[in-house]
Amino acid sequence: MLATGAVGRDDRGVSLTERDRAILDFERSWWTLDVPKEGLINERFELSVTRYYQLLAELLESPDAFEYDPLVVRRLRRQRDRRRRARFEAPVREEDGRS
Image (tube, rainbow, N blue to C red):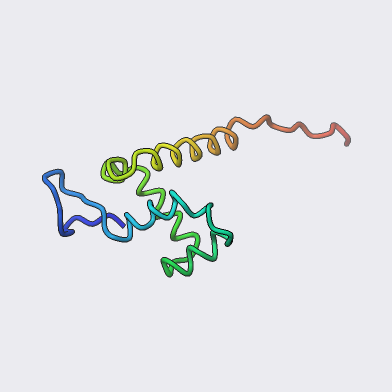
């Protein structure tokens, strides 16, 4: 979660919390482990998968997150944008025309 009064705050006003950095670090390397991601999320962060992805979505919009790990943030933004395009640009199926 982004914090406005965190230690190490700079003049821009918002800095990353320890958990924010841990989430970005986790996204950088979770796939190298031989364990399902959902289980790791619950074990490491004590969060539901839904809440984890809500926090991650907020981080992807954060300039501080981008500054902390631009490669991970760019990769995750590209994946998110690709999924959105696929969902919204998918061809509409027509009914089969039977009455």
